[in-house]
Every structure is written in structure tokens, then in C-alpha cells.
Length: 149
Image (cartoon, rainbow, N blue to C red; front, side, top):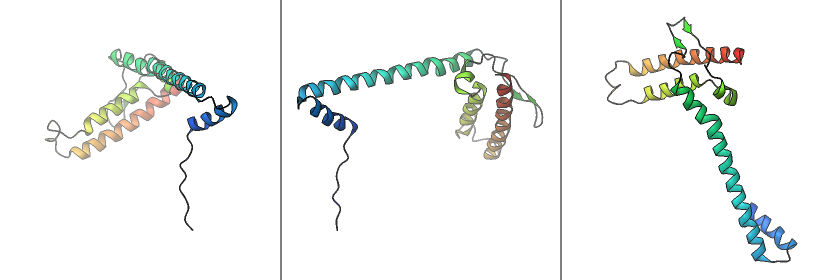
């Protein structure tokens, strides 16, 4: 027994079928309604992304540009100097400290093996070592941020 493949009906095709029934097969009006629907959806999507840019990305870049001397760091393997975000805007929206995002960016930059880093002996070991230290620092930052905000 062979099964015939039937192409699934898209959401717009379903709407078109329903509109045809309601509007007595007036295809021009149905297509106009669908076009209006697509335009509205595109505008809603654009508005959403613009809102997210304003609330998340802009706040991160603003904090990135103004965090001089306000960043947590590792003193040695046991001692960490911890500081809360100096402005909680990014944290309040995302639940993530901008410092943790910066640590991730730093690890990504370090992971890029190129001529700049290729001369370092045991490069992979030191990358894993830094990853371990940054993970501990990020966990500690999360704890103090949760307590503060």
C-alpha cells in the first residue's frame, strides 16, 4: 500500500479558504485582506524588534561604554573582587549581568586561534583555565546581582 503525499495547507491558505466561504468566493477581497494581514504582521514584528533593541541592546552598549573601573575581576584563584552592575537596566530586562556577557565575549575572542595567540605554549590549557575561572566569576556575579536586585 503506498501513501500519497499531500502537501500541508499553510496558515494563509487556511485563512483564504475560510474567507472565500464568508465572502462568497470574492477572491479579490480575500487577497486584499490577506495582504493587509501580512503588512500588519510585518509591522508588529518590526515594532517588537525595535523595542527589544531599545530595551536590551542599547542598554548593554551604554553600560559597556560606561563601565570603566566598575567591573568584577579575579584577583587570584581563591579571591574575587565582585561588583554589582553600576546600572541595573540590562539586568532588569534580561536577568543576566552585562559583566557575564562581557566575560563570554572575552572567552570567544581568546578562543580565536590566530597568529596573535599561536605562539603561546599550552594555549588550549590556558583557554580552559580561563574558562574555569570566568565560570566561577560569572556564578559569583549572578549571586550578588540576585541579592542586590
